[in-house]
Image 1 (tube, one colour):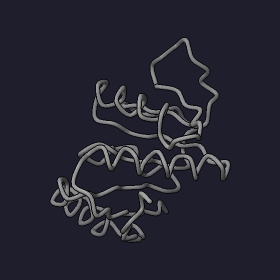
Image 2 (cartoon, rainbow, N blue to C red; image 1 turned 90 degrees about the vertical axis):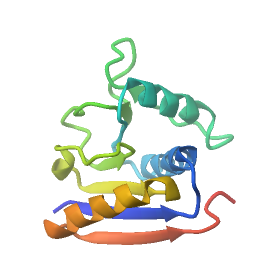
Image 3 (cartoon, rainbow, N blue to C red; image 1 turned 90 degrees about the horizontal axis):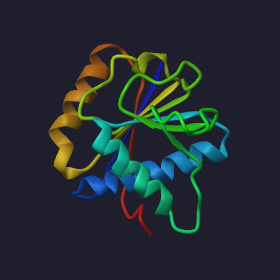
Length: 145
């Protein structure tokens, strides 16, 4: 069954979510996992893509945007707003406001919560809880140090 991890950041803005997603993606990459970072739309996808080129500092996150045919689709990190390819079923970092219908095929789903999306996070928590998914909470104070 899919494991659901909620990371609660003591931050307010969406960019904090994106930066934290980059850190988690880097950690998952170094563990040999395939990661899909799910965004809400193409503009959001491009914003996260730009951040992954510069954050975390001094680290490189080899990634590709889904739908970009000119890139190497064998990279283990994909950013997209649609359902990912089948082999990207290990880690889903969900930056969308809703829960994607395909989340259940992943081994692990990551939800990153900041103050601006707390009510959305509560709704997601209830959805997963009511369906019996194992839930884990991580309070991330001073994570950006």
